[in-house]
Image (tube, rainbow, N blue to C red; front, side, top):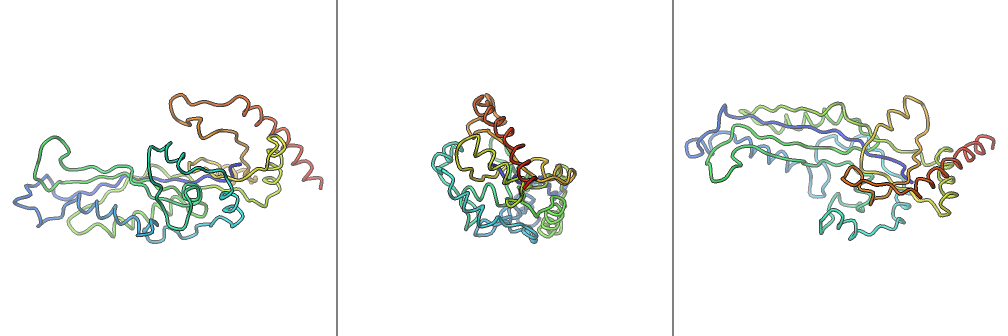
Length: 268
């Protein structure tokens, strides 16, 4: 049963140095190189433990409870199988957390792309006039996207030396993270309803992706409860995305039980 989703904000960073590409024999080593500065900026995003190194990035982060981490640890997770879906051979991330905790409970900074200078065939010995990068940040409860944007802006400004100009373009205001209150009556009712429908103990998951649930819950002043029956192998957002009809019917059954459970909780 999903009990939370990460938030997200993203940015494109552009660094501008000389007005044009310069001959590296005449100017190399004597003027700022935007690609070198960009590579330093990007490599400084993480420390040796793979934590995001932007000052203030973790301020306000709401840590997952010991109960939730214990329930996640009980999930039948096969890391090798998960790696195979990513066509990767190694798991790596923030020290002190499991793979599932890294993609569900922890904030991230991912470098999505970097370009600049000469990228065509053959050599071209230049100091490039500009460098560009795209970065996305997955956020967790307690982090506000606009505040993270301010901290990213301050980080870039501090990393940009004299002779180089930085421009940042954020992809909108971002999306806030959300998480259910594990002690709420509504969540306990939903967990019981899904347990009745599937005939099994219900454990908790979160999702690494993002959605508008935090804002909707605030606007409606309502508890956040997910009743979802999708599978990892449903190829979400990919070609040939699918859904299993038996699971849809189990989801409908869960919702039917949910109203009974909520009514019983109200009358208790």
